[in-house]
Length: 253
Image 1 (cartoon, rainbow, N blue to C red):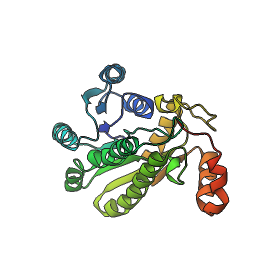
Image 2: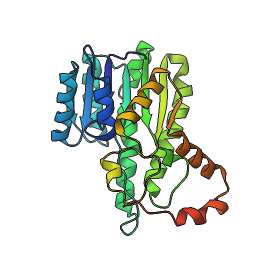
Image 3: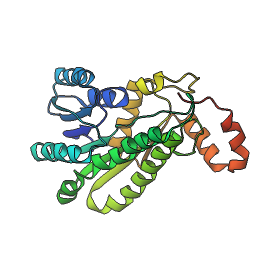
Image 4: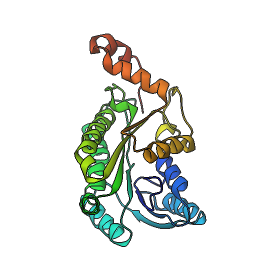
C-alpha cells in the first residue's frame, strides 16, 4: 500500500518500531502501537501525535495470545487495519555463560508466538475485506544458525520462512506479505553487543528502507546488501567449511 491509513506496529517503544511509527505518523494516519515500557511508548506516541497522527497505545506482552487478540479486535473494529507490522522481538546470546532453557523458551515465545499473536487476530478481517498488508520482522541472522545466539537465529529463521510461505498463500486474497531481514541496526537490542557490528545502520535509515520496500510490496526486504551477500554465502557453503569460522566469532551477551 502506498498510503496505509490504519497501521499497527508492535514493539513500537524503541528501535526500528519507534522509527517506523514516527515515519508513518502524519495527518489522517491512525497508529496503534504496542510496547512493554509504558514511559518510552508514551514518548513515541506523543511524537506521532505532534506529527498529526491519531495514536492509540497498549502495554501488552506480544506473547500473551488472549490480550493481543482482544486488543487487535478492538483496533480493527474502530479503524480497519491496512498495515500490520509484527516487529516486536527480543534477543540474547551465549556470551554470558551459555543459553539456558529459560532464555531459549522466552526468546521463542516472543519472537515466534508474538508474531502469530499479532497476525492472526487481524487476518480474518483482512480476508473478508480482501485487502491489507502484513510485514514480519525477521533478520539476516535467520539465514544461518550462529553459535552466539541459537534461539534468536532459530526464531528469525522460522518467521522468515513462515512469512514467505504466507505471502504465497494469501496472494490471491488481496493481502500482501513482506518479510523484513535487517542486519545490524542501532537500537537498545544492539547497544549491548560487545563486538564490532559490520555495516551498522542508523535506525531512521533502516525505517526508510523498510517503508520503501513495503510500498513496493517486496517479498523480502533485506539490507544492507553487503551483509546480505555475506550471510547468503555462509548459508550456501557446507557447514563443514563454515562451522570452525563461526565458532571463533564473538558471542552476543
